[in-house]
Image (tube, rainbow, N blue to C red; front, side, top):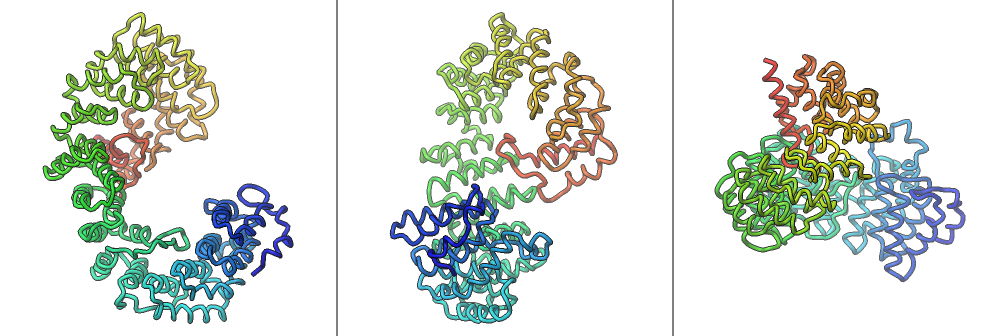
Length: 622
């Protein structure tokens, strides 16, 4: 270890961290010894951000280790935080030590320094504070495979003592994990302490094949229902807490995971752990939505506060999208929550709308929130006569921003009936409220008026590129005059950058966009994959020929957002090459979700669309 008196012996100015020169590190380390607790806390926070930043370590990280170790022993009020900083700095994949990049790397230097000072940190295993002991165990785990033989034996002996005698079950459980890092087996599964049994079960599950043995699932279900009540649930090397590790392991075996989630929920769903596990299984595996919704329904009464309850209700609403006929029990429960506490009524009502329960429409009309109106328009398109007047009233009252956008998007769901809202849409365009979506919808209305076309022509010259593109296309739709649209898109496509958003607007122009082909064709070979996809799609729209588009789209098809969009564009060409059939079969029949959900993908789930489209294309090829 090195005391603060030795800080000036290190050329910190010549070393770097996340924000450049490391010359501020000595000041931060000295602050750890001050009586000012807030200053010491701020120093630890700053050190977590500069000598370790988002998983990266730097030149200054290893030289700081012996000083941080000294602070652990001599600034006792900050032992937990400093020990976790040391463990975080040394975090690495044990397999990386054989890599040619390991020697001389910053993390290798950190681990070497930590191994040297570790003997002086071992007294922390006897600290009176449980959090200090738990943090110290994570420091040891970070460098377990690198300790020299003589140090290993003494460390293992001390760990054996903790495992047998520590008064805190969570510390004993941590000792099981660290002993395992040293290859020392324990009889953890036979322990009378549930925390220890659970730690042992996790170690067995890490090495177990699938499906998990029933006796192992029983241990996890029984002993994992009520986590250790302490507030020191520190992550292990790899930034994984026990809950995260449990969820990861249990999502590998969905039957076991759902069985465990059911037990945890029945035991009170403490910390929403059971419902969170159920949601992760739905996000990982296909066709588990009915089971997950049953579990989430059972979990609703157990949520400890409004925030947790609202989160579960939002999850219910999300997965209801994939259930054709939600049960009456679930719909009745949502109705109770939707007419109950105001703090959680909105997500409950949104879920009730998604369930297509007729009572939802009446409740939405009583509280015309923009998101609720948009959802109601999607799920109750037959109610245009009741919903459109409410949407018009909200727009006329000055709705702007995301609220205005949601209201206009709700109108889009009603097709030709949305023409009734033309005065409000014109006002939105004139005043710049939700102008992009308003321009698009005016173009779809099929009702040109001098006022509308003039406003769109003016908006096509806007400095807002998104508005300019939407207005230019809408103007063309209403007038058939492609001049303004061609001028607008020539400017947009001549600019460098990610032009795919503008290319996707060319579909309504069709062959009228032919003068833009010299700008579109080079983008077929663009580096950015979204630009290539959109250029191929646009080329097909403009030329009517799939010849240039198909090879580009086939290359992009895959279980990614851009790959899904490429598959949609490929389907529109009517050509699905034979070599794509194995990929389509994989998309169709995988039990795992191939695409994760995205908050930007709109209603539904991208993976569901991927599977549905793949099956449709396979069927069409027969």
